[in-house]
Image (cartoon, helix red, strand yellow):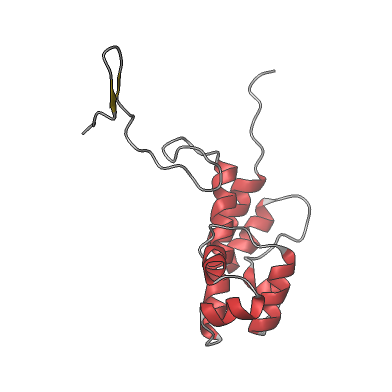
Amino acid sequence: MFTVTKCNATKLVIPKPFMPKSPKSGKLEAEAQDPKEKATEELRHEIGKKIQEIRKASGLTALKVSEELNISREALTQIETGRNNVNATMLWKLANLLGCEVSAFFPPVLKDYAYTTVDAAKVKKINERAAELAKTIFTKKENHER
């Protein structure tokens, strides 16, 4: 239901219904998202989820890890939920603190520069979702205007 927020003799202002914006892009969440952008966002979530899994398996709390890294617990939570990107330095610190390799935070990586069906099959055997994300991110849009 709409509510009147301002009223004067000549103008009645009725606000639009609230539509939350994405914290990263600032776009309305209802707007269509580019498939590559969406896949990149999902990849960020996958990395964060893996960081959280390794942290929990190590028996460390988010508070303890954040204190060791000299960041807020909220900042660590945002990394673990994929709301914030994590930089290479922080990944290295996390790996050292959690006793793992930096690569443990990531899905399998393609070894060649070109994404082929052979690569997709290899990655899919290890991690089906990683294969889907790589395919979406590295597939070029067809140019129909020639």
